[in-house]
Length: 438
Image (cartoon, rainbow, N blue to C red):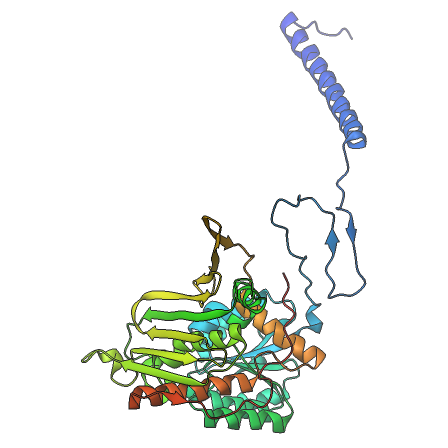
């Protein structure tokens, strides 16, 4: 049978498609060939050369790339495997816990969140879902003592109103758990002594959360003072103040707070002065004031101003106020210069500067240091103490000393007279220096 003739147009259409398919196939083959060639010639991704120590807590040392004229990086992080980290139960889900402590636990190297305690089931359910805490590891204040049966919990972190610290520290110690307690440690030196005794009886460690003593800028200033870099210190000016707005908040109820600005934020001035000087005051003199008619201060003080005399002759002039724009700073005046810390007691943003004369010049310098999460640093220090069976750097005795001093400050403000400190510190208040990464 003879084939039917086709038109020139149909012929070109058919042959054009064939040619196109042939060209496309050739291009595809060439593309694949080119990719194979490129794959063979392109540099392969390489991991930077490194020294890898055997110990899990020793940082990996990567190859150097910065010159000496730039600020050097710190060591690489050395988190312990999750199963080796110390487990924390956080008691109280208020501002500090939700805004600072729980997020900090997520960045810790030796600590982890394993349980929650709260009086609000709805809040705790949401937080537990956010942080992956099992329902059986969520406790009310009534079931708090059952923490003793939770093997995943090594530490109880008490973040409650001041007047509740003693009860929950004592109950936590009886449950056999180590205790990290927020500052102020309690509402009186008597309660502090009872808390220390309870933890000693239970053979558990007790630490007070003085985060400033683990903060790099404050530690660097302390080092410069100890080395007499600017000569002997003579005078300290310190203030920590902020503005309050809610009369119903527990901080303005004496039965819950124990006091006003002094134990809440003035305590930072008191404790940090002792920390950087490494000595204890022998005398205090104080003034107290609250604005008449202000509902914020019907039960607790608005302002406390006081001086402390130290054995070396240093005078520390301190002030705290609940009714002014936020200001957190101190300055140490020395024989040959001064050291200044802005945002000294804040959660972040510390700025350390110094000044001294050099001939006809006044040299002022700002010392730049890498910031660390203060809450993570203090928790990891406590975890390290537990893992290595060491005394904490800020144990219960450190908190007790501050309460003894605050009671003297209140007495001086009440009587209008200086108060001499007659008690003697017979042993070092602090444990071994913390191992702070950086």
